[in-house]
Image 1 (tube, rainbow, N blue to C red):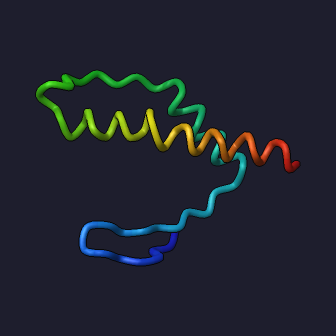
Image 2 (cartoon, rainbow, N blue to C red):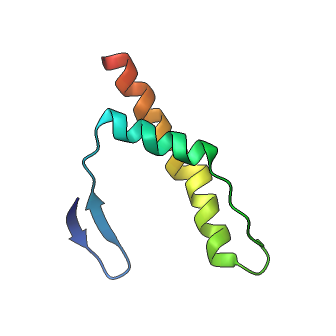
Length: 70
């Protein structure tokens, strides 16, 4: 893991993951369950939405692209 740059509100990090590690993370995210109250735990709700709507799809797309390259 490497920090690429730091801005006032953001830190950009470079992760080096193998295809196998990406698939392990995807399997975990696909099978984990989380119990929270979206009305009272707004930060957690934001984190869940980010993982579901942005992180997981991007990682899944990357995994699919790697499969076609191999």
